Length: 200
Image (cartoon, rainbow, N blue to C red; front, side, top):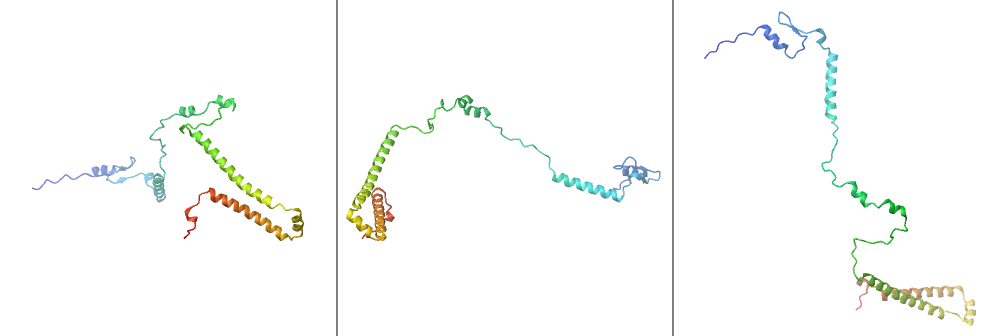
């Protein structure tokens, strides 16, 4: 069905609608034209400056972040009292080493019965073995020295011999020492199977 035509708005109503959002000093004259004061009209330079300032504000706002102080989620359960209790007393430090017990005790290690006896026994066995080996080596050297003592006639002959023979005598003596040391090492030290020669 046809509807009734709406009433036409007056110029004053149109002017008041345009007036919304504008400054209070803008006014509408009797003809309905909008009149703005001269000071509210912006020049090109002012518009450009406003644009630039708004752009700078947007850039600064995106880059700068507000400073937030970080707080730990979990606070420490312990206090400094436990650390203070663990430290030695000042009086004990001032007294000096006379009253301090210098013997070291490992509290974490559990003492087993008979450990010190086993240690002493092992040390005695090793010392006796070492003494026997040294006596064996020294006995070989002493026997070599006794056998190599020259007589009066051999001294006269040695003086007439050239220096080459003395050098060879010294080298053989060193070789015998190394041979004795090698024999001691073979008898007392373990040998890896890979070093042993396969004999058929």
